[in-house]
Length: 146
Image 1 (cartoon, one colour):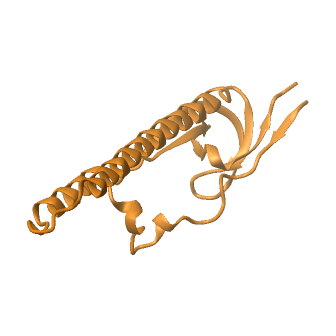
Image 2 (tube, rainbow, N blue to C red; image 1 turned 180 degrees about the horizontal axis):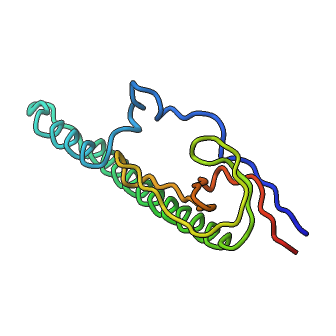
């Protein structure tokens, strides 16, 4: 009989969990564009922004947009990978913690994706063991049955 042990997801906290926000990390593309347009509309007509500064800002905008698309693509890939991994557990015996923190052990019968109501881009892949639900990050052991 083979067993695969696991640990929970990443530890530590991120600055995005702080109630005061995350500074410039909280600025999305639309907000950045609005700020830039407002800056251009309100510039001193006797001393306008030079072309070099404007080109630098446009370059920064392109960089931010590119990074935003990359993060979105990697997040989507990660979600797909986690769902694929969870699907491969159907019919396998797992041990982990349910959504209430209780110990769960049994055969995975199905998989679901929980979508955060506040941020629809945040998804949690869950496996169902009987009538209990275990987040994939809380699966502690997988019994391969070999």
